[in-house]
Length: 207
Image 1 (cartoon, one colour):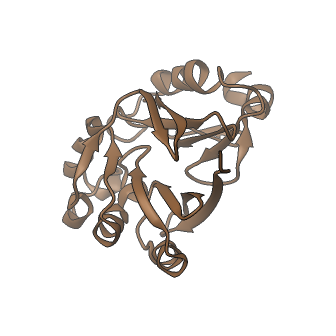
Image 2: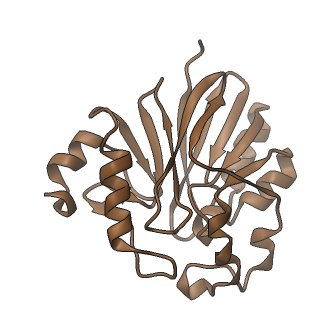
């Protein structure tokens, strides 16, 4: 079994973490922010084959470059279509109404359950709260979970945009993220990587 390598590309005006996971020449992308040129150049230069694009949620800063990436690679885009309401929400409130090209792509609906990526398991976790369709992606073979904007180092995602709910978000973290092994690395949508045990012990939101 080949190792999965995780690389972070910080993209767009909100400095969104876009993750490129590679296993040999095959790769998947988790979230693709606006202004994705550094990611696109890396894919082309290294001759990577993108087999899938996964969305943790559909706020503009996480989906804004996905259409361009799909056009370049032909890769399927997977996300929870419960978040497609953001297509009709103003940019000021986390949506992309003023940017019609953002949703100019084919999205395959994705629900919680077990998927296979690089012939290794990936658990799709329902983690609503930041948005109703929020998903997280747990790779047990490398001990990593990609959570979007549900939880950050010593913080949690905002819930004041349309569709956000603070009680639901905290429940998602407690019942989906904190049940993972303590040493699981948490890769968030913004900011540094953290771990499950670090957030259990240090986050003021769960003390």
